[in-house]
Length: 514
Image (cartoon, rainbow, N blue to C red):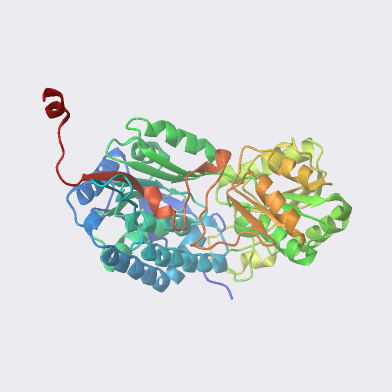
């Protein structure tokens, strides 16, 4: 089955202070489908004035509005209703994300379900935000700590998982009682902009969430440095994350970052190799490799390396590349020209530095091997977009750029090791520390390697599974703080100590003057 391209593009408004809004400057920008080369969306182009208006609305909603003071049960109702509305809109939302990002539509549809589940889980946390009490401080002293919402939170999200990543942030901040201003990537803003009206329908008061669309400069930069923003939550590249930290120093706002990764998939000789094979290919091909958790490094034990590498290559050959609107497609289009050239540049680097290209390595189009599946839904006026075939290098050395740097494309770099200690050393040979996969039947090996790798998530005999209950974030330059899980709501709070003195208290001055 193939979904057809719409006859016209989608048009969007921003959402500021509870209503749809155009940019104050009247300007708009547009987006072409990376798979089809036709215009698929038109959006308001926010300037600094629009950011200021959105922040002012959020500031009022926090300082004098009802949302921070509502019982958790009341906030939970809004979040649960939002989850219902996301599910009801999943087909339209999936189409929007496929058209803007180039990801396979079946995957996009699944992401809508995953996103809704995060709102469900955050709703449960609304009732469980708590502090501690201390009654051992003396007969006349009672102390306790409470968690209060941090205030106005600015959120900047990337283009690879638009609704899913805002759903890793926004419902948890709302559960804590915060108000928020959201700026999605200018490449994929559609579903996030649509979210504003859904929140209003769910019962969220005006001003609690505002959503703007525009570029990193000036909109993103203004949001990062804004003096009335108490916290910034950013997902994106490590390079831009560092810039966000720099911008935050104007008022020492709190910063939470989810950044890049160069994640190792470590396969030992005693592993279930059939299961590992599927996970390795999935890990590098999922979302065209445009994923911070991408398993872009395969570390395979030398005694099984030749056979296992051959099986990886044979499996990766069969992964369908093509039109993301076709239900059979597994690898869609690359997001934009910059990323497309970056991926091809890394492939060239691998060849230049002596790695052995075993599969792929080139861009695909209708004249250059793109399967027929890629043209089934193309309407008149559409053209073939940016596609890169699944690419595999072996004989990769740990110091090569393709072994250490984030490529963000369907490119797998294979290294070999002999011992668990060597695998740990290779795995940690990068600035990142987001996630890793370990494949072995030996429990000692599994936990020794898990403890040795400096990363925020370790998968044992699985890869890239995720649950709202489990926290997510990175070590080193993969980020600051954690999303998801029961601790995530605490990221959006300040901890306050309240100390109570019981009974009479004699002042120090009175004592001194007796």
